[in-house]
Image 1 (cartoon, rainbow, N blue to C red):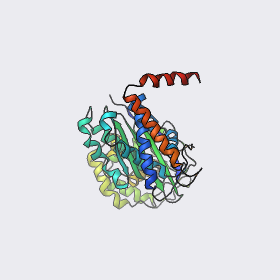
Image 2: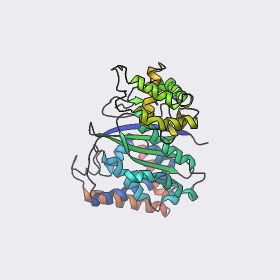
Image 3: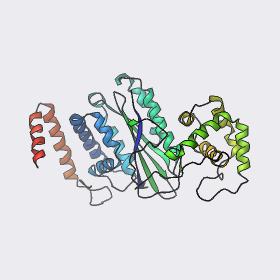
Length: 361
């Protein structure tokens, strides 16, 4: 049985624009490929998923590849280098990558389906996991970051990891979300195990443990209350003086415009909050409106806790901590490639000897 997901971390990074130089991206692709081959050969594809799901490991990996340690671009560039470097190796390694930045992220379901013939089970649960991870971080957790990047890593047996990132143009930061598809049984209750960030803000957190009663109430309201009744409640709430202790308000919610979405929820009768969240058309504004009703009409509060809590092998693109050392970078790629080639031709005894020697150091 495939385990449900675990969000393993969040990272906040300064929002930087621009493109990585072709000469650097080419090297990043090569070193990323050799690194993934080495780790997969030694530890298996599951270990790759676990490491990618660790925000600290991912950040360090980006630094090893020569990208800026403090730039939001490390997410999109490293994931892009991994995807490019893995092309043609999927069958050999049993590791697949779908999605990416912007429009490419919306191709994730189709790309997952394209590997159907290489998978040991139906890709439908992978497509669902990809969609729900994005839904949670964009709608159920409203922390001010709009998703623009979504990369989905998975194995032939159905294990997976998600790395996605959103931007906040107000504070000029990007926030990266990591998910690991194992050991957790609930998509919508505390799906993360570790979070790192440089700062916190205000958030509507419907996946917090303390939001459990609100999730039940929201799902109940969505199926038991007719759309016109919910709209009338929202209109009535607009005349109230809302409490100032948090940011949840009706300023950008237009009750009449929600009628169509509320009709969908009423007709589909989702059995719980996860099913409600998964419905097409149910987004941040719908959940914000239902959260307001939950809190102010039914006196069931929601959580406003931001879940965020808060390396240089080859230098960095922008010269920090020093310019990329191209000669050393190329030598690193070549040395790793040669080591892997020796393993392929049967030099495993030498590799094992080095490993035993390392244990004594």
